[in-house]
Amino acid sequence: MHVVIDLNRCQSYGQCVYAAPEVFRFRGGESLEYDHVPDARYEQAVERAALACPVRAITLGRPSEAVPAPAAGGVR
Ligand code: SF4
Image 1 (cartoon, rainbow, N blue to C red):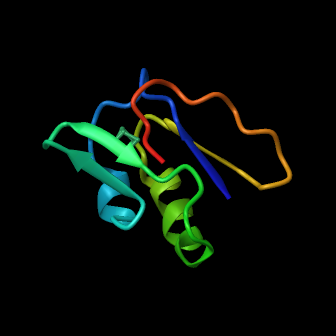
Image 2 (spheres, rainbow, N blue to C red):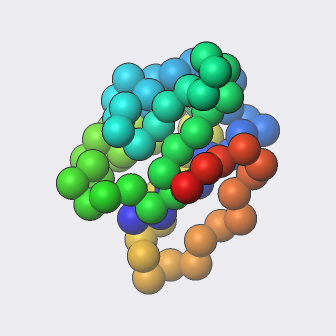
């Protein structure tokens, strides 16, 4: 699974951090970091995170799909 967050859309609500803290985290309390290709064991949590995002900033893709270009700020 690939994860891409549109950081221009993200409002730092943190719902993704609560849903999948192994994948999403705030650095310095405000800058969102995330794993672009998280471990498969976190797949369900990442799907919950994408559904929980109030601004629908999280896009998920399968490994066979092209990875959309991430917005600035994401960390692998
Ligand atoms: S839930 Fe959405 S808006 Fe909130 S921090 Fe995560 S990506 Fe950003």
